[in-house]
Image (cartoon, rainbow, N blue to C red):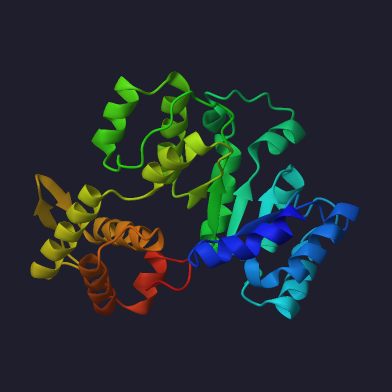
Length: 299
């Protein structure tokens, strides 16, 4: 009842906000009630997160949910939550549907199913093998992976004015607690691994994780300069350049482009830099663009 009341108002206040609903396990009584809510509020929902995806009925769960959503609102996407080794085993099948843009790694249920006792400080290392396996399959399928939820909750919340990495580190050194430092470290590790997002359970996690995943203005500026130098040297398609004491070639140019595209996806890029990214895309063959950004629509 609360969601029925609040979702339309949330949509009115901010039309750009993405609203995701986490459903219960497929075909449970609670799931049927969830689907009734989704059907009634379809204009206010962008994503359905399917808990324990594939554990009971395999990939047919995503197939049936996709058919249901296409009938009520074809723009709603699905995020299967991988919470069991059964789900990880059939991950390619879960990701074969166009309605799936991202999958979610449910680390706590997954570790419970595996009998692995993870710790809040080192869970990435403890589940590294399985996360790498999920990332591998997702990259082949051109899907994103949303990382694990942190259970450490610090006492202080970082102000949103801090966006540069050195500013974040300074705040953590001066005002942050050990919990905040660990959450930020984990978010940076996941972003560096190529994950496309992270779950949070506390307001104090939001900006910390956002800064870890969002390219900073300084980072974007550096990547723009790299690509401009590559274009000027006619090395974008092949060859190498020296940039700030480092040898860079097309794979590095591709990573620079990925940074700009990630910044655009997270609404953290200026109009000029967006136009420049579009110019770079125009200079590249479609196959190279897909290699650098397999997630579909770009600009």
